[in-house]
Length: 285
Image (cartoon, rainbow, N blue to C red; front, side):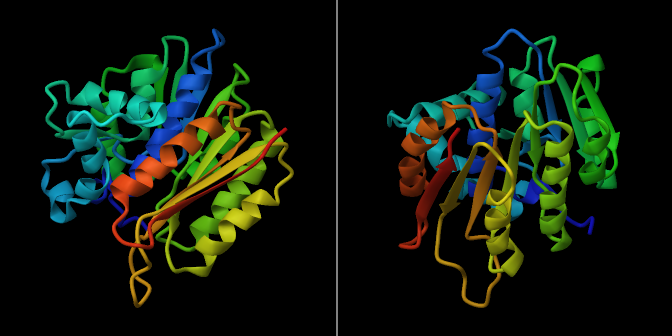
């Protein structure tokens, strides 16, 4: 399916969880002098205007990045993980008015150093063109691939510097995306066992969504971290996104404490009813 456009959902609660974790991973990887690659299987447009008609149609950012943005503007102290994430969003909104939202590729673009590289895949014909426009003039640091990221990343792993963050975050509109995500991580680990892999998935009332975390945890990994953010009770009838999860294979040792401090605040700020909660579990070396 190629109908999904992330611009309709930019900055929602799922983006907040995903991007706050991604910023932590990027920050850790940039602390060492050795270069690394950032690889994104489903890059989308990379950058989003929150005043565009797409974002305004449902205004999902108002229950995602919006509450965090207002909390910091109001002087509320926030955990370091959320402060770091908001600092990156602020790069696009220096006047303090929330008008632009960075997708994962743009966060990486802002944080990576000259020697680091971005490798971005996008299959949607419209999204890849917008992605090209957004990264026009970026030079050799960024390489865009018009195609299927599930298959594409297999050809570029392991990366020459032997360090990488790989984000696997399809829309999951097609239920086959769950199985393909699992298979892609398996293949990635066979080629590049020491890479950091971050898998995002939606919490929806679908059997595949419930099964995926357990399947990921059964992989032969020395360490992993799994965090979920549920913002409301599932909608009666089974439609809609009530939360999301991030599974990180080979996470940095600093990630668990950062996530643990941030999640209660996210539940408090983004929770929509009594069903709001988080879970956090990990396997350590």
